[in-house]
Image (cartoon, rainbow, N blue to C red):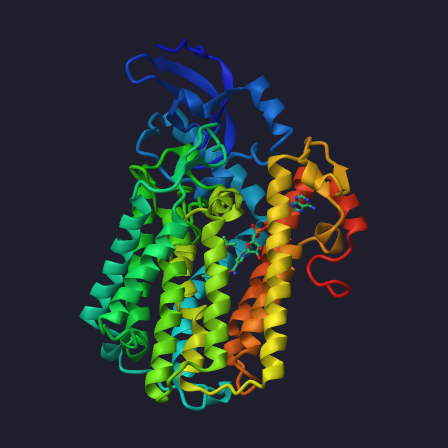
Length: 531
Ligand SMILES: NC(=O)C1=CN([C@@H]2O[C@H](COP(=O)(O)OP(=O)(O)OC[C@H]3O[C@@H](n4cnc5c(N)ncnc54)[C@H](OP(=O)(O)O)[C@@H]3O)[C@@H](O)[C@H]2O)C=CC1
Ligand SMILES: CC(C)=CCC[C@@H](C)[C@H]1CC=C2C3=C(CC[C@@]21C)[C@@]1(C)CC[C@H](O)C(C)(C)[C@@H]1CC3
């Protein structure tokens, strides 16, 4: 049994339930049976806290020089809490009521400053913003798909006539999507491929992941090929594309609701840094739990790499068959072949390097909520396929010159993307790797160094640049008649510019002066001479 660390009367720092905020509290007693401390906050609230949620004043002050968000009164941040089943709140005595009344008066006085008004307004905007994205994203994808299928796929055709609701639903399609998810889940659980450890979590532990994405791609390709050989008409996907999207959307909503509900029982250490504000819509959108798992099955890792990503290439193939069928072609058009080939390369590359996803912010930092569930299950397979969907019903006559130029562009983009990502990964794994000894670096106070030559000395995010060059090649394959095939490129520019800002903010915090020096040496973020 662990020793009792604190005695009645000790002043310590207690975590406010469901948040990462600590406040000064007094220990009232310790219950050896439940192993809980009863503590009293300055506003008179009595709570029972676990040992792990209490820090000594000295330990906390040392920690605080690293993290600076914690000394406000709980009453001021009351809205950010969420109740944990492990703890019970008790406010009883009239003395407590008096203290609380006093505190409330004080809080009102403090709150009614322009800064507080601004904060309330900012929170209000945040909720409105999240509600907007919750409704807007699904509708936008639907509009994109409707537009893509129209003979004249011009943006000028807005507003579109929405299809009748019942036409968006098909039980059989829903069943197929469920089967696809199940098939991918089974593949991901096969005892093939190595098992690796993820990055250390807050509590110092690591999770294990089976890396078999590339095998899953091969199995899926063989299964789809066999189905097609046995005259299963894959162009059915093209004819029922809106229904497929609706099914994926419904599943992503159900999954997000499940994730949100189960997060109520998650331990504090399992929660993501963002997504635990206490605002229901915001937390639902951002995701509360960092790595939700059912036994060893990691739901986030699975969704991020498998059904949507592999689904993307299957849908592309279905669009290729639909193009041949509808246009009575013996072979697919060169544009369709380019789009299929380029995107298959990108997906295969991602699955080949699946392990690297474990170090990315999506896995290490972001919660799994509606944004990623919808992103992985609906956004990726239904917007990333928009070029193939467009080509299935719109011609793009490319001259031999254009075909070669576009292929060169994709090769250059891929080379930059792969080389930059692999170089950074290899350098992080072993900075003294002889193969990387030619690179110039800047040391940082954390002990890690930053590469400042080669691709990482050209721009601060060469991997983003490579990705964008490839995206441009995919869009150019579809010609210049409409802007719709450029949707992916526009999305990627916005996403990567935002991601870059987020990453640079983190790096500035992590590396301080060294990051400033890197930015001075390598002036541009993504586009040389422009941004
Ligand atoms: N198509 C799509 O929808 C998307 C594609 N992507 C692609 O995924 C890939 C990975 O992107 P992402 O995870 O965002 O970011 P990065 O792989 O660029 O990782 C950024 C991290 O790299 C490290 N780093 C930054 N500069 C240097 C340097 N000079 N030397 C050494 N290390 C450095 C820092 O981490 P630390 O120092 O802690 O190691 C930094 O936090 C990209 O190619 C991107 O294009 C990403 C999102 C969406
Ligand atoms: C608007 C909206 C809902 C956005 C959601 C964005 C997500 C779809 C993307 C955010 C980062 C992603 C990454 C991949 C897929 C798309 C999402 C989830 C990725 C796993 C694809 C495979 C690549 O090789 C990758 C590992 C580099 C990549 C990582 C980021």
